[in-house]
Length: 192
Image (cartoon, rainbow, N blue to C red):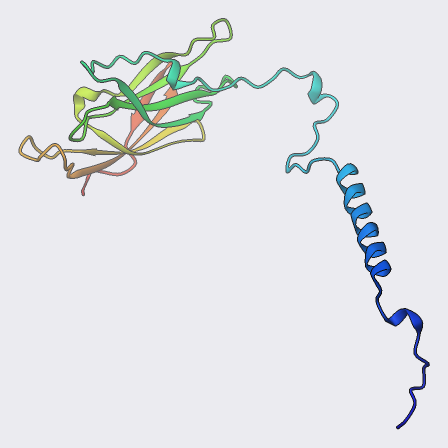
């Protein structure tokens, strides 16, 4: 039998004292790491020193705080879609809300309302109606882009079409011009 080149070392056999020393050292590292924590990570950059003195940006109007001009009888009005953005170029965001009565059955028609909130009052208010619920239109998509309101509208080709199933799709765009929202239709009405 050939002898190993390196003689057998005494510390190659683990004894209980070695395990106890290793466990104590590991517990110390864990305890120390729980005390010394780095700052919380954020995706945002730290504000510049001048930004700290700048006024805070205004929050968009909250549609939950508005009484909409909608007659719902015993049920309440619900906001089903909303989008925000600066629509009139004044640097303050507006909110566009799609609202309908919370009917237990069927497809209730939507109303599309523009909300604003002045600096002098904290209560948001309706400043424009883009789609009146009396027109029997349902809004399938809503967005605010580049200061314009964009919506996909579903409606009915005739009174014979069941109110559950709109059969006409139309796109609409509203832009603030000369103190009013002006509607343009990018594409013609399409059957659904």
